[in-house]
Length: 325
Image (cartoon, rainbow, N blue to C red; front, side):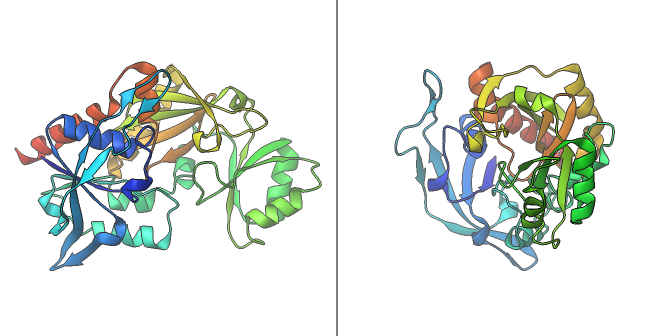
């Protein structure tokens, strides 16, 4: 089969960390053709989504003592061609957030991929539906106390009531812009004003969960089912556990509560065509649903001696074959 990956420039990817590379390696290892493109290489002609695609050959990473190790020239690109995306069996939308206007335009282009011929992971409609912060709010039995507001008085009153809270920009990524708020902090008004751009943009405020000091668990879901997890633990004076800000990773079990949260999400994720998803869990609570370019596979594979990329590709192949029968 042919698999296309819409990614950021390949020379900027970290083969030892990026889930996109893990998925591409898995597809290649299973005998499939792997192609890459970027959002700026997409278009529509004759009612069909098009892409400037390049075949890629990868030299897989190898496991070192405590990390994945890649050779310096870990990929080779072939000649590019402007092709209908429906000539691919599956297309993975793996452009990193934030979700900007150009990102949204890309999802509109992907609406013109014929779903009877090609599976898009994740669904462009689902990507537009699922803001990674707001999407979690519908799962009221899974999330901690949360508000969304741009009103300084409302936010301040909430922080005063809770004592401690976490502020998250609705369009943020990798922990960027997340703030710890505490009642009585003389900087509180200023932090709210800066984060809401003087009341122009709403932000999410969640009650601070003391369990955050023990880690922020990333659980990978495939078609609504949990297939692996990794714990991201804050280091030093940092309260955020995100890997992008230096969080330490550790092996972790998927608990009964984690599975219950996944069951609450599963039917909604399937309805919205969100096949490959990473959810964040602190203690017993769901805090985010990541759908744009979920990461964590490399760390889970290394810590648990598994191959989640292979599971994902095998599921996609099975789904395609079932659809075509």
